[in-house]
Length: 344
Image (cartoon, rainbow, N blue to C red; front, side, top):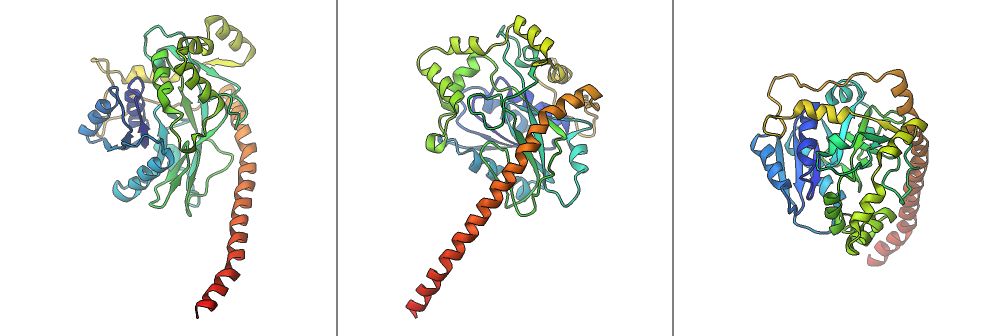
């Protein structure tokens, strides 16, 4: 698994521990100028021989470049078979068996598998761990590409290790000659815990989302940054928190769902000191991933279906882009030929 982190101390320990027990063998992590305990947490896993740590001092949020570097390193230096490009607020949940079990079923002619984002909503911050509070999941995310909200449908990608892979911004796609994706199949749920507490929002407000080259920030990112700069983060957080009454109404009308899977999994992984247990070589993981029942399958299929619909649009756009590049190359060829003749 590759992991890019900056000031994610409230979640990164749980994130790494979960994946190491869910089927990930090794982590390549990049720490980008963290000021909290993130680096110390990463170093703990590095000392245990479970993580390779890279320091990135740039402040321009070149996520695609930094993740591509890690993904290629996984192929060239660490003998990876598959690479999951995860964010610190994501938990890749296989729909049956471990992550290894899922990826082992992929036919050789395919090189990429998509996971489906499932968003968990912020709850009143009582000082407890995020996973204990955030057990409410959005059942009907916004349409893909709706940049007014972070809670839109989207997919993330795992791919076969490739020394020439290119991972796009956001880790939503991986490109390579041998990385054809399986379409219309999402065997992994990506449980997404983006907005967790007022303190975490302060970290995001300092510029997490506004450091991207070109300043291509979305509406919800701009609103958060404005709330931070104007000293209104508490109001912003209160406005997005889901109250008990809203949960009751949302569950009743099908907009929300109670989902305790991550909470229960992390309880199993807790150590006596409050941290998380490291996986022991040869030991069986305490985590199990049961097959969803019919009702859960139907709910997931309804969410994932919209990703199947937009996949056709993405494929069409890719073909148009490839055609435009070919036309441009053909148009340049006569000019190049004339220049070569002129030099003679």
